Structure formats: structure tokens, C-alpha cells
Image 1 (tube, helix red, strand yellow):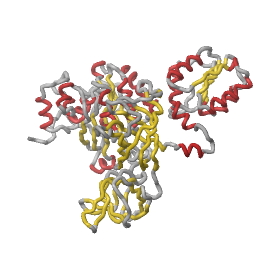
Image 2 (cartoon, helix red, strand yellow):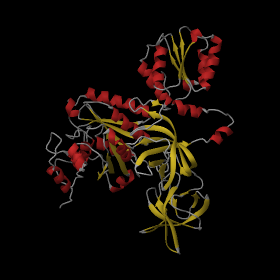
Image 3 (cartoon, one colour):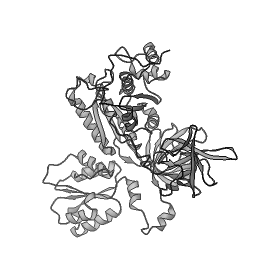
Image 4 (cartoon, helix red, strand yellow):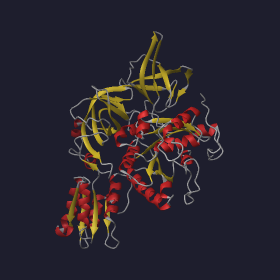
Length: 571
């Protein structure tokens, strides 16, 4: 059976410019995932990438051609290249994550083809957890759908900063520029709410190959590079080596009385022979004697390197312990704040103790509090006491033993964890740590006893702020209703019905309570500037009667962007 890549003169990979192995090494390996709603064409797009880049082998292509199931209108169903499970081929859907590898003269790639069905959102989260970029497929005939929003939100939650919106099936809409621009604008607005800055939109036809590996003549109005050319230029995360040293101990190797080593993988920073390290939880300092591998000793180990470490001193180090540099300690706590993706068909049980798997450490723990659940349709935060499959929520976790962790945004490995049902051994949730949680003792020890500003923000999803609506009868009431429906802690003050001298006092009291206040003024109020000073320039907005009235949806959107801490923009 031949395993030689197919030579096909009709399939030529475009060159982005002179490329060498050195250039490829400098650009590194790009890990990216596909995401989007069901039947948007994710598997077909990956099949087209592999096929047109000559990364499909003879035996793989022969298997696809012999398949009795052909879901496309053309002679070859490229989605079957990645949909390898029998159930996937029979149902015409992707069920499990499929990883594929290919390279171009400019870069090497690892692709995670993930399911689009809501039922398999957990699989999508798994595939995206190690990705540097995500290709969000959008059906040109349907636009941005609920599952598209869900997957884009999970991608941003997992720290993916580069999103490519591939508007697929352009052949079904006559390669309409208007259709593409409308969908690209909708996705841009969605990405703005999520705080993702690196967005690239491209019109494609995965089935026919337009703008996949080379620009298509059927979209003369599109001036950007093809999808593959764009992916060749996406910067790879290179901050791991520059980050704090983190080496979770996986296994203690003791073949005889002369050797004692600690095996594991460097997940952040650079581990060097001779450097000083600290072992947690003991806190003992020692030096690295050697870095041992099957091929011999190393002088240094980069992130992703599996290595066995021997130490200068005989200190107590076990599986689950952490070696780190003395000048960059992680958080150590039994309680922390995290975003949680519930993956189990069984609902969350608030009285149940789960197994918390964090790096190489496993301890018992529970979800002590649900701050809010995210509505993926509107991205609003809503109160919740229960979690069902595919729900995303901000929670507070408590474990029986301390964990050594970083924020997920800083170090993915030490900032992530999974929850395991101790009875069924099923993985029920995946979490991304944000920060330690404040203990009751710390709350009482604060110089400002009571509920903190941060606690109010976590509860309501926004800080205290104000919107002054001048000379717009009824507008403030409508905005209040919309914000209230979105679970905001909001209150309307009709300034014409309040003693003018009390307006500033009321503003200060509501600010301290974490309320977003709407001030409706039918006439000019001399206290408007004083109220603005109470809330500060970053949290005070204004709707003037001298300008055209903006749409309520526009006002709500900009307030949501402000609440998410993404940017400050005038209403």
C-alpha cells in the first residue's frame, strides 16, 4: 500500500514567498481549530486544505473514493478525509475531534476538526484548548447562528486571540459581495463583544476550493489573501518560554539507590541545568543537577520538553508537586474563581464532591458558588443555581488541598483543570482559572469591611456607572428595561422629580452600591457635571438632545462592551 502523497498537477499549493526549513522553524507550528454551527462545512474545508496542499496519501484518498456515502454534489466528498468514524460517515456529521497534520514551505500545521452539533460542544472545547487560532465557519446562506456564537465565545474563553471567519458556501449565493460584507460585519460585532482583536474574514467555497489555498477569480472584489496564506502569517504564541518556570512532577524515577529523578514536562519558562528552583508545597530551595533524556543530558529544556530532573539536594518531591523559579511564584490556595464549561449530560450537583485534576495533581473539590451563567445568544450574564450540559458559567471552586495555579490567560497548563465524577470516572467539566477567591478571614481583615467593588462586579457583571439622557422623554425608561432584562443592577432617576441638591448625594450612594444609574433630565440640569465627576470619565456616558437619537440596540451594545472592560466608547 502506497503512502506517497498524491501528485496532481491540478492541485498546486500557493507560495507566500521564498521559504526554507529555517523560515518554517522560525514561524513554528500553528495549531488551529475549526468551529461553527453544524453543516457549515468544517470537515470539507479541512479536507480541501489537505487535498490542495497535497497532504492526502494514496490509501486515504482510495478509502474516501470507495466510500458508499458521498454527501457532496461533486465527485469527491472531501469531508470524509477527516470524518473517519463509521457513525460520522453514516450520519453526515462530525462527532469526535480529529487531528490532522500537514505543512507548506512556510509553516507546519496541526488542525483539530471539531463537531458543530450543540450536543458535542464539549468536544469542541477539548479541540480548541491547545489552539493558537480558530477558523470559524459561517454558512453564507444562514449567517451567524447560535452555535457559531457559542463556539466563538468558547474560543475567546480558551484564550484564542486569532479568529478567521471563513464565510463558506459562497457559491450558493453567487459569490455576492453584499452577503459577505453583511456576515463579516455581524461577526466583527460579535468578536468585539468578546474582546478579540485579531479578526480576519474571507469568502470561501470549501467544496469548490475558492479562496482556500489561493485567491479565487470569482471574488475579484476581495483583495485579502486566501485562508491558507493568512494562516501562514498568523503569529504563534511564543510567550511560554519567556513566562515563569513551571515544571509539574509527573513521576518519581528511582531504578536503584544511586539515581533519583523527577519526570515531567516543562509547561512554561526554561528549565536549565545548574539553576535554582523551589519545590512546592514544601517551599524548599535547591539546584538542578542535570536534565536527563533518553538521548542524553540537556543544558536546557524549553516548554513542551519532556525531561527527568535530578536535584542537588535530597528533598521531598512527589507526583503532583511543582518545581518553579524562586522569583515567580504561582498562587497557592484552596479557593479560586474560574470559568467553567459543563460537559456532562447529568446536571451539576451542588452537594457533590468531584475530583479536580490540575496539572499532575488530583484533589477533591466542589463548586461552592455559581456567580452567573452566560447566555451565548446575547452574551448576557444571568443568575443561575444549576448547570446543564454545554452551559458556561463563572464559578467559585473550593478544594480539599491547596493547588498551585496561575491565571489561565498567563499559563494555560497551570491555569486549567477538569472535574471528574468519582463514581463514573467521567469528565464532567473543564475550567479556566481567573484568580484566587477571597477567604472569609481576608474579608473581615480588610480595612474596608463589607462587600467589595470586585464582589459587586462579579455578582452583577458590571461596575458602577451612569448614563445621562437629556431631553429624550421615554428613552431612559426603555434602556432601563433592556438592561434589567439583561440582569444588570440598574436604577432610573428622574432628575426633574428629585430635589436638585440631592441628585449628587443619590449618585454617590448608588455608585457605592455598584448600581448602573440612568439619569433622565427633561430640562437642563446644573448638576450634570457634578454627577459625571462622581462616576468618573471612564464610567459616565451621555445622550445629548443636540445629536440624532442613537438606536437603543447601539446604546446597549456599547454599554455591554464597556461592562466587559474591553474599551471606552461614547454612547
